[in-house]
Length: 157
Image 1 (cartoon, helix red, strand yellow):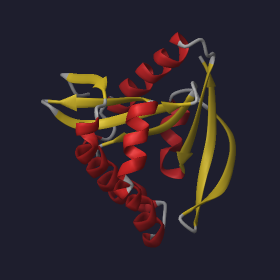
Image 2 (cartoon, one colour):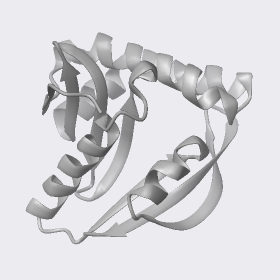
Image 3 (tube, helix red, strand yellow):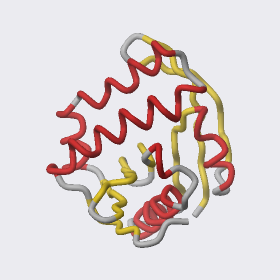
Image 4 (cartoon, helix red, strand yellow):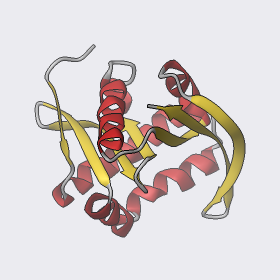
């Protein structure tokens, strides 16, 4: 467990740190479940700065910090969809993801929704299982011309 975690809404100036965390985490954590080509394509999403700007400006986007260093982030779209939750590769399994999830769930409930939905890489299935999500289905989707296995989860709040 990590102490002194601060959660705040993301700002555009956070993009370099957020995208670095995203790229490094995908490469280090998801590499065991996806091919090198898939990881290269997925992690290249860090370079889509316009997408990150749009997320921060139009979604509920929060970051977790320890000593002013971003160690995780989460964002919600369309009211009740957890569109992303990433924890720095060096801070995995230290309650940061759980704290981000609890705050995201609180935000969703405050907006009047009674359910949270999430799409998850196969690397994150255990995390969602341990937080009482129901796995609705497994499927594949195409991203930049490559197929990726993932799961759809849902949880009643």
